[in-house]
Length: 148
Image (cartoon, rainbow, N blue to C red; front, side):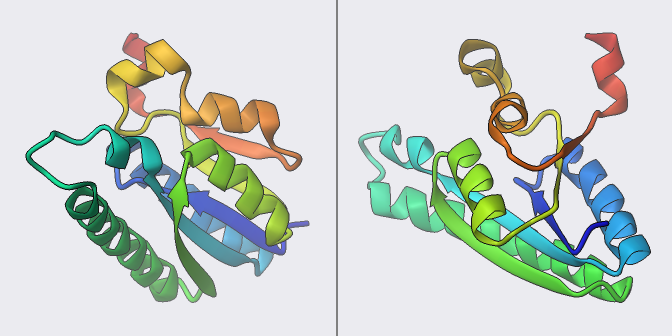
């Protein structure tokens, strides 16, 4: 049923909950797990004047690399084949394009990332991905979301 599962992650607590689901599904279906972290172009362009956009991008890229590597290690520990990627851009655009370009059969992602207030102003990355994706999107809620 699933040959390639895409797991977009930003390292947030909710994204971490999605990791367990994605690894478990990949193991059950003998699927390849694609772990993707997006360096959000909006974060780079809205940096403080005292910090260069290049410095901001480098910091964000280093964080993305650490997050992706940690998930890759967890997948390897579960004997799940893994492909990692770090891409610049607008997160939902990158996720939808990546899923299509790599023939992913499923996207597994947390419902909340690091963008607290932005979620209410712009709509969440997950919501936009669900609306735009050509493949099923499994969303994982954090336990605290029931309190909202």
